[in-house]
Amino acid sequence: MTKLITQFSVALIAVLVFFFGMIPFASANLVETGLRVVPNEKVCMVTDMYFGKTQIPVKHGKKTYYGCCENCKKTLSQDAKSRTAVDPVSGKSVDKASAVIAALADGSVLYFESQKTFEQYSKKASPQ
Image 1: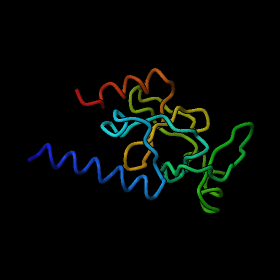
Image 2 (image 1 turned 90 degrees about the vertical axis):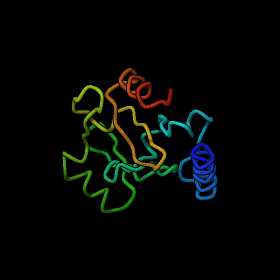
Image 3 (image 1 turned 120 degrees about the vertical axis):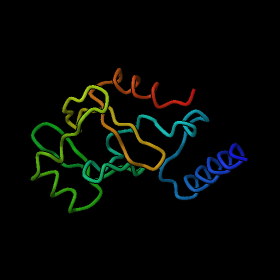
Image 4 (image 1 turned 30 degrees about the horizontal axis):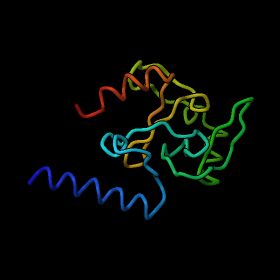
């Protein structure tokens, strides 16, 4: 019964994602883990959500950040803390403009300092 509920849940999420077009999945493994690297320009770096479409670019120095609305654009321009995150593997501060960004099944994102730390996290998050 639990397996049936899990299969139903995965199928329901896939249908909802397809319908809303917010988080396109690329493989069965992706549906299982819900984690994949996404393009930085498709992430609101204030709400930390993947939107599946290009966000509003915000230049700060020589770097480009992305926000989903004028308020996020303003926040990225004025608040240095909004432009950084913490890598969940290394614990180091990461500049969101240069981070490897991975989206979870719910659209929330994690920022990694490198592909290596993303892969370490992904291995731990994958079902065995």
